[in-house]
Length: 469
Length: 112
Image (cartoon, rainbow over all chains, first blue to last red; front, side, top):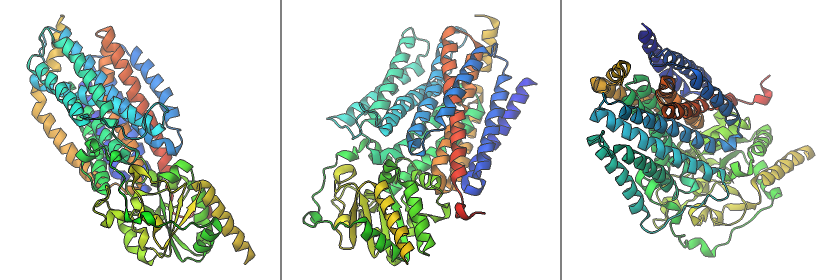
């Protein structure tokens, strides 16, 4: 009877998880999706607590209370820190799967009557490899995103890097296969920790060559791995709820990774093993040309005289925390009857959808946020494009310069607007040291300075001048 | 080992359910892909934090390992896993809701 109740709660939880993701299709229903998810999780936990094997609730309770205590502050981080929080929670997910797998293996070993099937053993090996590599990989990614001092931000590459990494991974798989064939051999209990260590090391090595602009893809891939490790746990424990919920998470990570890769015109393999950041800076033909710079007064005047303005935010806006000033500008310009839209490149920022969340936080209505594919046809009729801290995603070289490392990447065609205003701290080339010919184009004016200060100044000019009319 | 361990071994034997589980996995993946394809691009960040919380369903396995209290080690590992999963559940759902509350349609300042 108990077991039927448990299975019933699992069944209901599966349905609610699917609905939860379904309701994420639109902002108007999305919050309902969260409630469905919470209900599903409560049901699943309650159903599990009925499990006949549970003899004591003491440690479950203590760990759960501590988990709540750690989870609440983690949910209150600034929205610019959401990428690192996400990476950190992937690490926790991977850790949980890895530890459960480890515990399960040693429980099997203790029990002479039980010989795990090859299938169960395969699932277990996959669970711990995926779990532990996700754990260290995500931790390292979180440290990079948090810009912790001793962690190198730039991609680090060395000779035979891919050979070493893949070699380690292959070794882990090989040892795993040995364990699958001889799960009860006398050396098995010693090989198991070696596999764990290899998976932990591989996670870190995988992230070392990854640069900031690749983070959206890598976070998505790790998201997928965290889900798949839960699936593997489901196969080990013969638990279908783990399989369904893990598969939903895995599918989500997979789709996000595909979207991110497409937005950069690169393959999974290329992102993980391409060491993009080390591509040599190409000496573009635009070298001799110099950029024209403008003051915030000029910029304000140009914006005021426009009818249609498209703002292109990038990671620089997040770093400068300029989103609230951008909202002020949006309001001032909208008041004057100027049509202001925001063009969002899928890989702008450090995780999928990063810009949308920051702009939503600044209370910019979400129907003003337009995806790249939908904004590009409008750009030739746009008076001013205001580029705030975006770089590679607006570099026209991606369209025509075959020697450029970003050639073929879909971009926001701001160069087709009548005037481009680009706010940037300096002329220093961005990620991968690629020169951006947009900055030296005839219709581009550079406004140098911190994005928050510059946009704040422009807002003052715009609102001040409106008072004089 | 005691008879309870034998019983346990019998109930956790995975071969019996291999094919049904593979079907469940396949179907869930396809449903996931279809459902997630329709998620608004606006919401990709909240989507990821929501799926984070959902994948913390690993807590189910962690609870069983911890609650069994077979050995000190398994209880310790299980407890850490319960802690990690619980952290993800709480922070994942809370931050998703916090972000979603921010997505407003039009001119919130003039809303009333």
